[in-house]
Length: 476
Image 1 (cartoon, rainbow, N blue to C red):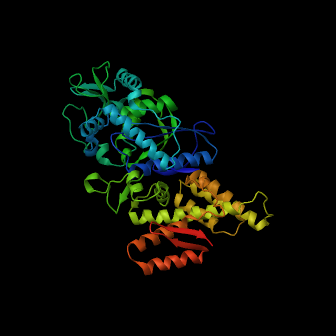
Image 2: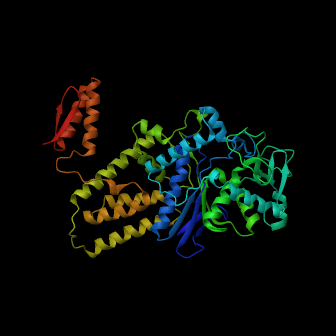
Image 3: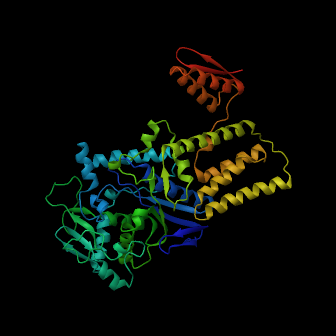
């Protein structure tokens, strides 16, 4: 299995630290609002990675954090140490406490994860439930002389880190501006513009909804420290894979590396994997641009969340993917077609297998090999889908075809196993959809178009019966 390692900037053979076992961490959501479909591209592709590792028979320990404190709004402008805590801002927006906001949007996130059929991490730690671990980590860095105090918090000293360890801060980032500290807003109290907050002071007691006592005073953890504290708690000082969105590659993940390796004197992560942004109609997604969508928004427009999952799979995770409603509609049509094929195959499925020629046995083995090779070539999901459709359209026996599709779906996660074979009296979904469309056309007075759909329905062996309230379809 080969993956692109963002740290070395090349495709490498994946070799786990412990044979047969993989420790993997994904940076999860900041739960101050609903996660966007852009966020879910990252989580879905991380899910594909987990499923691919399991497909390759690795025993995977999967951890994803929930950021429910400490992520400041200044991150949007290049300095995550400035601005207002996003949870506190969300609380003011909705007239609730930050704790209420965190609980509500964490639950909403998990519901959307289920709709997209994402593998549930074995551990889903919250920053607010690991304050002691974060304080301990900052204390360890303090003992090693890697911190200093300002009027607003305890900071990590990147220059001292480089001097003491001989390592270069920010090697993961591909922005020279971050490496040299030119991009971030200057803070006169920082020793170096690249330095970052480990612990922030609260101000007056009770000013914030979320604050804790610490050796340095009342306050709350910086955004970066939580991931180091929680990932090492559950996966060890050094683990195999760390995944996240491409934006985290520039400052958040370099800061994780520096503070983790500064505290433990060990390599932090062997493989770093980053997923590209989702664009909307060729533009970046943003609420100010009016193109910010959630899974719930798509459902309200009549789309199946699994159609969004299918759309994600049509592009390589390191390539930019452009979202549009026409692209989503095409993905949903394709997914519906696939599910109809699966339903058809389940109808034809028999326990007794037919004898296969050597040629067909070779063809089945080749399909398996091509699918596996696609996934193991740095998660090439577009190629994996191509193999899936070759199988769906192939001449191999129905039973073997169904088995292959269900095997592939262990990674693709499109829930083919849930598709039911239609009974003799059951109306196929595609026929029902045509009937619903015909009813709509009739209600709009478009009788000629409606009549054409009636002819299509009858040509497929069904009879249309109209009532004042609906259109009924029965088998001839």
